[in-house]
Length: 331
Image (cartoon, rainbow, N blue to C red; front, side):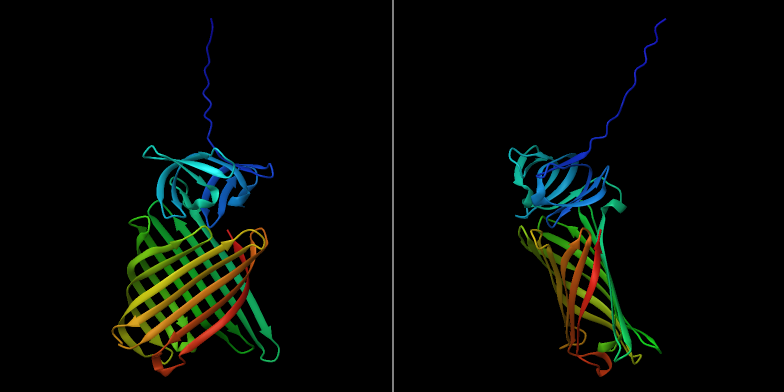
């Protein structure tokens, strides 16, 4: 009697990165954004690799590709005919050859939720003996991107500590959701909470809806514009409330990166609000971060911020500004 045993071995196809220095990384590409590839290597775990260091990139999984000329494709990618190039095999049957650095944003379409999260954590502390006051700053940003949707959660806070008290000077928490309508246009919605004692704001809840456009997308920088309508509920430090306030927001988001030495990343959000309920009221908010890579995932970050309100509640100060120096971990 002969017994025939047939075994089937299923091989999981992995993504592959071949670097110019001869190193090979094999695993799952998590994303490509702002000139970096995030890959979960089977031996080295999560790694970030600059695009200009990659000679060949291969993957049989489906991705959403956004190029630096605002073109949008869905499909797979294989190594190109030359080093530093990839061929996008689009779902419509076309093959699009592009350089690595033309890949503006690349998102896997089928992956686990937590592997889709990318962001940073920052903290800093300052203390002066003359005033006896210590200041703590905390901030974080987390982004989740899918085929059509993108979500961004940001938080920041400044606290003061002395021998007698603890003060929550400034707090900001915001959740923004965007839905892509075309390669350049998207719909957005934002919910946020703010506290700013310098401007006499005990708390402000704000909800906004509107539309945005990818105004400029280049190899190393991008500029987005967003506008719509916002609904505010404010409570001053004096306990006064004006009820529901309507405003027209105009927001610009800017990102720049330079990975050739020195490794520098700049991100900035500048917003203006035109009052409708309180006609003549004008507010501005600005937040910028300059990051220099120190070692692998750690950066030194300089974060200047500004706030202006032409009609602050309870007749408080109109201006608030500051500069925060912190250590940032990016994941």
